[in-house]
Image (cartoon, rainbow, N blue to C red; front, side, top):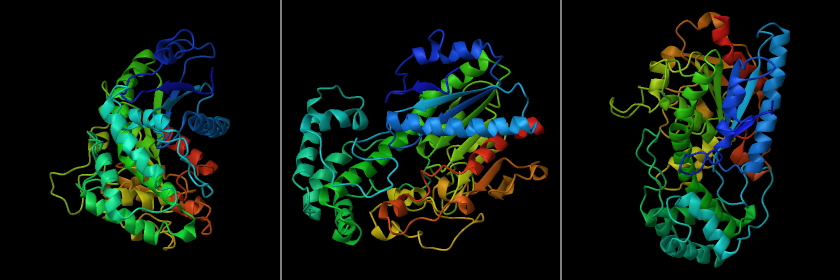
Length: 458
């Protein structure tokens, strides 16, 4: 067997390589049907998040599979899992990367950004912002050619608000409509008018992207382009989950009816696997486990009790819990030290860019226990699932899950804050991202495997 089996989706949610699914003898379906070491007992489906290249996805899955296998073997040695436990891992690959010169795991301040040539810039961004357009679509080429010219004209000198308006106006033409929106409030940064957004960027240049932070204009403008792609990729994660992965979940179970199935996602990948479970056909429960690590979507996505909105407004994934689509409780691993979710995610939800939001919690009080949050912009990866207190069990890692308290529990919030090494305040980008891409602690994977075996232990 391979360490993991890739499953690659295109922007339109179809498989990029159908042989990954059905190809003989190394396709996923043939492996599920016939394995010389015995039947596959547990299928693990993993998904990375936003702005991840194929190479970064390879590294992501290599690390996660290695850590999961170590915990699985440890559980078998302790007789917590059966000795014939045979896992198979699927790594979902989906187009979430915007530009090659941005990084999904920034750890040091970047060098001054450089643009590719004009033709490459346009061709690279077309499948991201207009996947339905033809390769030679003249309107897209004209629009993003103008964007390229604007970026190239501001390598160092930051533009004024009125200069930004044509740039913003063109981008807004490609604002995605998310049919799987999970945000209870109607506003996001792209809903504001062009003048307000332009002024917000100018204010951010002045107060945050200052010369002291060594951020030339091109870096800042590319950062905004990347923030804009936040909405494109967030929508795509939900669509790939619902239209691409969801139909396959039933096929996997039909192929091997006695198999346990666990879905695990990071960042926007958490939305992808949640959307897959929420939209999957077939018998209930759809899967044994749904485990969300530092998920980048609304903390009220599973709730009917959302503060400050009409009772008719509910989270889009309430059916996951209410309809029993997973056998184990929903598991959410989160931390307020996830700067991307604590600070940058709410910024993306804000109608107008407000620099005071960016670093608002980095030097705040340590929150190592579960706290209620009424923030409509709040992310599940920062605060855990909110609005489900009557069926939720809070756990502070590395504590074990109290199995005696699970009789009415449908959700477990696993707070990993105590495990996180504190952010280096001298490194601005590390402060901004925080623990979002930090998945080095073995305790995380211990808890993931612990959740996956809850329904085995009764």
